[in-house]
Structures are given as C-alpha cells and as structure tokens.
Length: 103
Length: 226
Image (cartoon, rainbow over all chains, first blue to last red; front, side, top):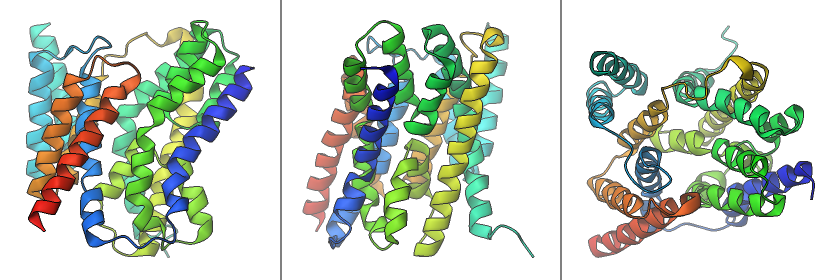
C-alpha cells in the first residue's frame, strides 16, 4: 500500500470515529441522566491528556520541580482570572524565568 | 456594520490562545516530514486529509522508521480512538443541527475544538454552529499553514523548541475551565490517576482506559445521586 492511500485511509478512519455517533444518534432522544454523564467526558479526557503529556514513553513522569511550579501557576492564575490566555502567558513567563535562574 | 458576528469573533478569540501551544508541534511536524524522507507535499497533505496532530505524527514517524503502512494506519487509529468519545458527547448538540453540519462538523472535531465546546456555554443552536465552525476551521487553517511552514523552514528549526510544556498547560487550563460541578472533579482525579498508572502502555491506550474507567465511576455516582 502506498503512503498516499495510507493517509487517505487514516483520514477516513479518523473522520469515521469523529462522525460515528454524531451521525448515528441524530434521531435519538437523550435522557437527562445520560447528558449529565456525558458532561464528564470533557474533564476525564483533559485530565488524562495532562498526565499523558507529562509522561514519557516508559510511563515515567518527565516533569520536575519547575514544571510542577509552572502547572501550579497555570492553575492558580486561570482559576483566579478565569482566563486561559492570561494563565498561559503567566505560566510560561514563570517557566522561562525559573529555567534561566535554575538552569 | 460588523463583518463578523460577535459569536464568530468570540470563536477566533478563544481559539487563538489554543493554537499557540500547538504551534511548535505544527512546526516540528514539518521537520518530522522532512527527516522521515516522505515526499514533502504528501506529508503536508495529511494536515488536510487527516487533520489530527498526534495521529499525523504517529503515521509519519512509523512510516519514516520503515513500518508497514497498514501497521502505521492501525496504530494511528488507536491514537485517534478518543475522538469517538467526543462524537458521543456532542451527539445531543449535533442532532438539532442541519444535516450538512452533522456531516461537516466532525471533520474538525479535534481535542481543542471539543474542549471549547465544553468550556463555552452556548445554549443557542445557531450560535453553537457558528462558534464551532469558526473555531474549528480557524485551527484547521493555522495548522495547515504552520505545518507547511515547518516543512519549508525545517533546516533552521531546532529538534526541540523547548516550550513543549505549553500543550500540557493548555489542557490543564481547559480542564479547569470545563469543570462546573464537584462530581466532575472526582472524574478528573480518577482519570488522571489511572492515566498515570497505565502511562507505560503504547499508543496512548492508557488514556482511553483512564477515560472509560472514570466515566464508569461517574455513571455509578450519577445513579446513586438520582
């Protein structure tokens, strides 16, 4: 199989996964209880993604004290200002400042 | 007269900070295409055809290392499997939308777009549709441009840009802003703990396990509460 057809097949596969339930369940009525459970998917996925991006392929945490400090600043500022962009920039400033001071 | 509606401008404003952490990955993907020996235009076409950073990186890396294309596709689809959960979650929002949107919208249903739908409170269905398309195709356009730039500028882009933590920060910020109930804190904590426990599994399978187990816990908690 050529790479071009590989990319096409992977694209079709990715689209099918994204569209599957959106299209299949278009006529289904969702009970409130199910919708309340679906509200948990976002936090569950985001929390798992945070951990996944902090670990190496061997499963060990690759984050050190500076990374944890940066994450704490991100959490604190984002919750305080309720603004993702301000949280991100503040955390990155702390990250670079800490690295230049300790590195 | 404003050219863009307020909801579309809000989508641009919300999506731009989410693209900043993805920008180094877009450039690095371009470098990966060049280093893998894959024809440049073919590698870049995956940004349009697949549109999914981690899936594209997996496919190009494996093919570049000499893996069979069929094996690379299988691995890529495992990495993409979490998008099924996004599809389930957004099904109630999409079912009241026009048919063309139900077919077009999933094309841009990536992590960042899904996360914004969980953070933004969009009760009006038309607003939801405009916001979703504006946010999704803003990211899509920038991803296509910057992965292309990564290929062109590959010789001068370092192997590590040093701000990879930005993507973790973005997901953390989105997590905090997506949480609206105490029970969701429990779900997030369970998911994080299990993701750490299974982090050694290949192809992000641990992530899928973490999400499914934490959703099972959430389901039990919701039933007990009812």
